[in-house]
Length: 193
Length: 194
Image 1 (cartoon, chains in turn yellow, red):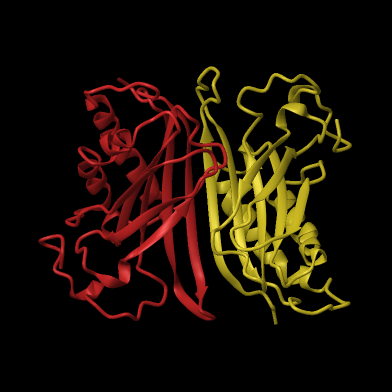
Image 2 (tube, each protein chain N blue to C red):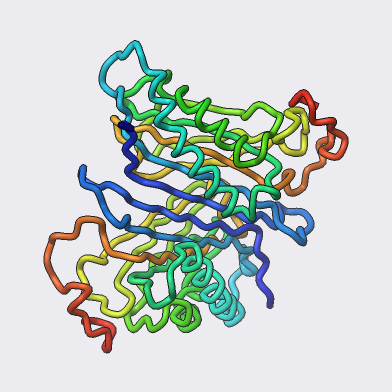
């Protein structure tokens, strides 16, 4: 039986038209899916925790599907990232349980992307903000796609909870002009370039 | 004057548990936000009509987006609210011009009816500041289960010459209402109060 208990979900989408420069005809879309779940290991040291990743898999898939759909469909997605905010009665290591189910869910929904999913994690109180790093889905060095989205909820995570996040974007930063590897120049085989 | 939008955002929040109890179906709230340039930042202007017209446009646009994000029919919206946060170089009156004269009518079209006053709030603030959007029943302001609110926040807005405008809608009241008062099912929804 699954030990997964979801208290809350949040889906955020942003459309960015400009940031002081020219208006974009089609805005950059950036979004995040969040779930607030009970941390089954809160309040104690538990040596064996890896089994919980299996429970998180369906949630990860559900979040990745909803997020891709909210941003216009999997074919539009060019950047991704993930992060965890662990409530104060938990351990940083509990946040690491999201790596596999969160990352592989996005790879599955986005049809086998090549690049590692960038991530971040921390322990924090209710209302703490979480910066989710974002990079290109097939080549981590694509400089125009280095991005991030800040997320959070005023009433989460409680001490015994974890806030899990997935993030996606539909393209480069709106006025990207800092050079580096361009998306059209990647080979997209090793996940880096 | 046409409005200049820098960014828009939509937040959809579903509550599946509250106080340790399952909420089935979940209570869902959506907030649609626009970050616009404040054409009057840094100056005193007597006639705010252009901002009032922008308020009408935003009422339709944000109202439509928030309802669409919940995936429900307009008539199934149960509560609503609006708020604006004016960046550092603007005036509270700029928020008032957006929110009060003309936003209500186009918003009400998006939620079908809307006999009740749209509860509102305004303040001056900077990027990353919290804005609490008050919520009330859309047809009968005294429905106690639907007195609520939702916090919205954008880390990069409003900049000093911007205004952040938010419209919130819900498909329900609070998750576990039990403080009495007029109930959703008892409201007549004619005078906007009961």
